[in-house]
Length: 469
Image (cartoon, rainbow, N blue to C red; front, side, top):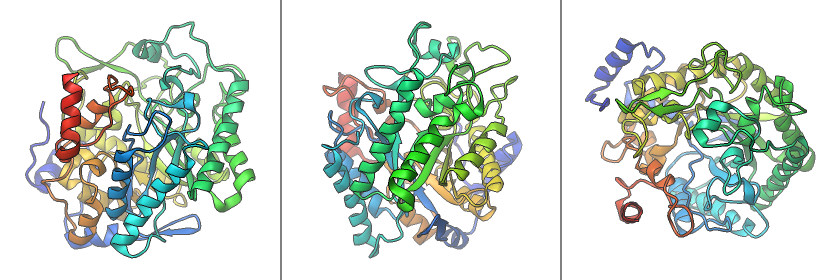
């Protein structure tokens, strides 16, 4: 079903009001938009030059041994010249068996020089365009993909509903406490390598169902890393503490946090619309879910955990929702599903509203932690209006763009110079990028991803090849 038929901001606001998406509000004045998005943001001891961020968007375009490849360098050069002052480097595996795809970046001794060049490529592009990169913050996201690692899945605990969706047997072994403790040290070693590469900020990826995220929902796990919230956050506390001990305050601690997991969905055979897989009630799994109604968020544990993260050194938080492997409409409200997936079970505006509501509640609860907001891409040309309003109202400090940065890498420059987006370039959320991410029949086991509609010269032939194969 096509939802985005709005020709004016007024039409979109009327629709948001009609369906009860009351957290979706807009700034109309281009001059105010420019002024709001140009505001510097204090993050720890650093003054970041404006309020625009690029989310950690994976290109799936590294080499089999974890180095950035030609398309990776091209992407970060475009990000660097685009005008955003917070350039969040994509999920980079801390060890080979923690990669989510065979072409994911992987930080180790042999990849270190190339990843250092990748950072310098982005910063040099920014310097050439704007004169200096001293006010650019570039965290690198460190990750272990856990359940979604290839070729070996590493399970933190068994959730039978997620197991059914991801084809994991009930007797698949669960990672031991001792193994988790060893992985903590792998995170610390990756942080050391990141420091040597020139990064001054690291991000722990605690979202999208990956290892650290899955541990947050491990209520039924036994041992040191399961059960109580104290235990479920133990690995994060230990990694933060060990990184601080190893690198001191020279390394800023950031996090992308999945604040509401939800439940897995599948396509209704009759309608093609997404429906939840059958789940028990109460639902003793996930993070940020209401136990009696896991289709609705409950942020009590999230607020408690963020408060602890702040005590342990967290200085910047990127708010994420959902798990793209089993409920993509939650994290990435879309106009058109990727091929073979379900149609959205709710109006995408309600998904946008959920993002804005949760980020706003957390930013108001923790005014001393700058929060990066998510969920803007479906709004297309009007995303910039919503971003400016959310910043002005204190709901977020940074407007973050993900898919739109692939389609339109200079979106920030246009926002700051014109107070408006170019409708001929903005992302339409038709998910061709996700389609490419899901294609595994490339000789290296993974197709690179980008935006075939708006970066046709490079990604048009790639998607054609993927379909032919």
